[in-house]
Amino acid sequence: MRTIFYLSDSTGLTAETLGRSLVEQFPDLQIREKIIPFISDISSAQAAVKEIQLAAQNDGQPPILFSTLVDNDLRDIIAQSPGILLDFVETFIGRLEVELKMESSNKIGHRHDSESYEKYMARMEALNYALRNDDGSTIQDYDQADIILIGASRTGKTPTCLYLAMHFGILAANYPLTPDDLENTRLPEPLKSHKAKLFGLHITAERLQKIRQERRPNSTYASLSQCQFEVRQTEALFRDQKIPFTTTTDRSVEELASTILHHSKVNRRL
Image 1 (cartoon, rainbow, N blue to C red):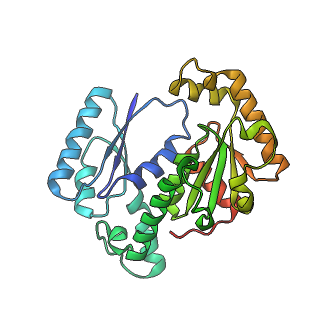
Image 2 (cartoon, rainbow, N blue to C red):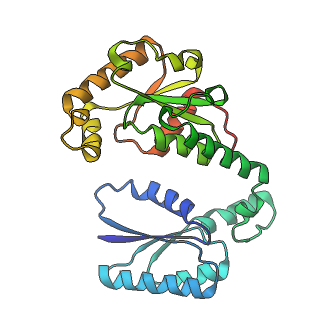
């Protein structure tokens, strides 16, 4: 077991995303993860060092540290810990300073400070839109949608819509295809005038059954035969109506969002 730390002077999401993309290249590695965000002063850096020291003692080997700390003094404190420090900022900032012939600001949270009010509002608008148009709860706003995700229940439509909204400012709605909708391969009436915006999410019947079993154990809804019917009919509808689609089986929401953006050519607001 190896402890992985994601260290940041902000939320830690960047360090976590970049670090995980590297760690995933070692699928047999057994890891324990810890995010330490908002390391913005000497005391919080020293507190992080204590956690790293404790992990090293418990594991009997040095933890791996992925860091996006900007402040040189804070990085120096972390570097004194018994961890293996992989510093994303230090790795690239020096080369950029040479290439751009200018010094970096070394300002903590600079990206967040400079985010425009317009971008903030676009993000909030997109999130509100995704929540308001979740699971076919309303169809009146479909004219405003950048994209409408469709698929059987529990195929990942909601988290994907929220991710598209949060990270790209995309107005994403989603509509669940019910067993009644899937008796034939015709589009449900509310979707017919929005066909150009549709993107399908598909999944294997076995994976769908597992997800549904956690929600409604031993129900008809979660039975393998029901899942097989819905998966089969959903794919038939997508193919018959020439709706682009992708599989959600064993894929992260990040991968799904990237695939959808690539194939749909929807313009990002963020």
